Structures are given as structure tokens and as C-alpha cells.
Image (tube, rainbow over all chains, first blue to last red; front, side, top):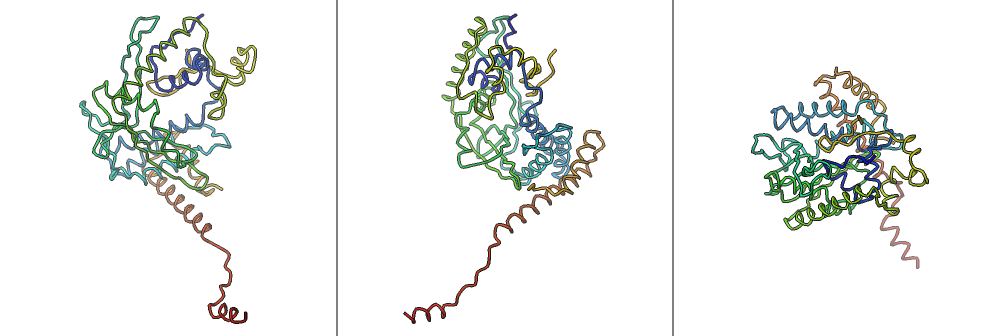
Length: 301
Length: 72
């Protein structure tokens, strides 16, 4: 039976499709996920929740910096929960808590050069979400497909309005700042914010590296002029059209190349090494549904 | 080697458990922030001190060096 075609797309799903359409179909149409949650996803989510709550406490609720730090740390610890960090990962609860404290020392809430804007609704630009229709309809419902996103903040910075995204990483080298200039995630966020009536000049990306004995940070400012956003949108429509063609035919193209080994290797490597992937999928994976709006995985129905 | 001492890691484990139980107070969290900061700056200082420490070699005096040149 053909799986449902997505009604909602986001940058994570599009990145998966571009890397390997077959992987995309397994991950987001059939919802196969590794049995153990990714430590990067889990730890990153806890870190983001901590920063979100600290910012809300300070900028919205008017708490003192110390109180806001404490509230944010509480949210980080609660979200991390009882997740067992792999022994070879630096993203333990303790190290993420340390990274959180380090970030707020480097970018103090009271003196941060990047402050969340006030939106027309009266809200502050903290965890800004958008869901905008694109010019492609869902082949099953006939409704426009929604492209959604959720950015950490929209800020006033350097006499402009930018999105802000926080990243954690294992290392920050000289090339770290250069990887964002064509990043589809940020171009899509700029498109979505523009559609929502809030044009952005680009993105401020803040990275914190979690090393064995210390933390480091870098910032990168990457611009998105209108022509880049328009180009991104046209490419998105072509990608979704290809996605629909593969869905209709039931044949999903496979990368069978660098995507299989990048970023610690594709999670579906073992099924793809087998003439019959189904037993591998049913034995080694579970079904969890990616929610693009909350950016969390949820249990499949 | 971790930036966090065993004592700090132990405290974090306690705070983590209390956060899960919903019994962690704001005052305890403020204490946690201070402990994390102290642990981080302490580890950074220890790392910097270890990096700067070098084996001390006796530096010959300029007079001795000139005297040696005079022997040639």
C-alpha cells in the first residue's frame, strides 16, 4: 500500500530527500527511525529548550538574569531527562548543562547585541514558527503543501533584522563559518519569515563546541538577498515535483554514493546492504513520526 | 579528562533527578549555574596553567657566552 504523501515539509525532510530520495521515503513516508534516539537530536533539543525558556523568562516575563538562567537550566535538565548518553559522545547531560552556562556567559541576556524583536502580535521573536503554503498541491488531498519552519529567534542585530540559530558541535575550525552561506535551512527560514510579513536580511549563526576540557564559540553572519531566496524557492518546487513523481511510481532514487557515508554514515546502511531490507527495518528500527512543527519525533499511530 | 570534577558531576546527577521529579527549586538551579561556572573556570585555569608550564633550563649569562667567544 502506498504511504501517504506529506502534507507538510520542512528543511530536515528536504535535506533528506536531496541526499537520498530512498532514505527520505523510509524516514518520512514509512517513518522508520533507529530504535535509539540520536544523541545529537536529543541533546540539541534539550539545549534549545533551555535557551528558549531562559529567553522567555528574561525578555517576556521580566525575570532577572540569574532567575532566567536558572529557569533555562531547569528546562534543559527536564528535557534531557533520563536519556542515556552514549559513552563516546560529548553531549552528556552534564556537558550540555555546561555548554548552556557557557553560552549565557558569552552572550549575556542583558547585554546581548542580538535582541529578539517585538512582533506585530506583541510577542517577542523567540522560537518563531511559520507554516506557509507552496505552489504545489498534495496529490491526495488537493490542498497546497505547507513548508514549515521554526527558528530560535528573530533579532535586531548590526542595524538589521536577522534570524538567529544556535548550533552545538564537536569542533569549531576556521571553515565552520563558511558552511552556512548556501544552507537551505536558513534560506527557507528567510522565505517563510518573508511570507509571514517579516523580511530578514539573513541569519546569525552561533556555534558552541563541546570539547573534552572546554567550550568555544563562534558567530557567523550569512546574508540572504531576495534573488537567493527566489532561487531557493524555485528549487524547492522542482524537488517536490520530483518527490511526487517518485511517490506516484513507487520507485525512489538512491544515492549509492557519498550520502551513504557522510555524518557517521546513513542509518539505513545495513538495510541497503541487504537484498531484502524489510527484515532489517522491522528488526532494527521502529516507527516514529517526525513532527516538523515541534521538530520532535513522536510515536507512530 | 573531563572539564567537570567528579564532585560536580555527582551534583549534576542529583539536580537532574530532581528536575525529572519536578522538585528542583529555582534557588537550587541558581546554585547549579554557579557551580557549573566555577567548574568551567577552574578547569580552564588548570588547562592554561598546564600549557604554560615548561621545563626550566639554566640560561647562560651573556658574560659567559662572550668569554667562550674569546677562546676562539
